[in-house]
Length: 396
Image (cartoon, rainbow, N blue to C red; front, side):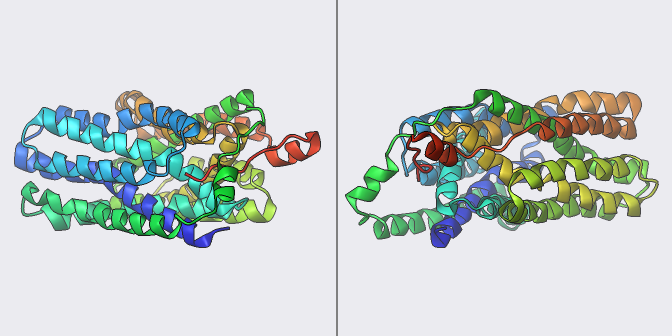
């Protein structure tokens, strides 16, 4: 494990996801200053997140065929430029294009950065969990940074580009330090991967992740309403529930990586889904706020245990296209939950929030059943058995 490089990549992930979360964090200020409607706000969210999810696999394909180290810094720098332009632009359609530019930047960052983190972490699942939590930490600072910067007006949005500039300078310094690597190491990094892709197993994993994303997005969007309207909780308790869900998710990600190193990565994947079922059922049937808060913490903890192991498993299912695997699993598959969320909103209007939570619990149960069918794969071990050389993941 290259701990120094892993820590640096985790820092870039924090900066990148900071800008990914700054677009929704700026929306309330845009509504107040520019008078945007809810429809206009939804359009900006679609530009920033929907487009990013769709094009992320395309960046993965490019990163697999043409590994370029500069994709990582260019990704978060373009995302920062999009945020700054969105804050400074007064025209709605220019703001929409700037939000889309931010989405393109974050989409370009994730596939090569995830492959680079896997290379830096070696065979450790914990390394991937640390890299993943870096993004969560960065996103958690977005609301505070937005409020501190543009509370006096969106004209100060140019200051939001400073974190990206600082990380860009650090990237240049890091690139100079590592520019003296031997030509033999460069050749090894470019050595082709000749192991076969297991597309059938990968498709099953994508289906599992889709089944995960629907309950996750539904819980994130409806948890506060459930605490406040169904259980009579205060606005503080509703906000605390969301904070608890996010914080326990970060702990669950780290726990899943640690368990993956100790007991194999299939253990946290299967255990996470199975343990999430009773926790989610407890949330759906919670009679009071205290029970709902406790179950929310457990839901976040267990649902995120499989997160990092699923990323490395996807890369091992597609050893010839690890960046593509990352782009599909972290982008397209996870976005399905957001795409179908309006349908569950309609269901909530018609039947109530408890009924909706019960419905997505059934989706999570199907995902858990499919997760039990997942099988581990080790391309290096297969290559050793067959005599075929398999390169390590390319460090982008």
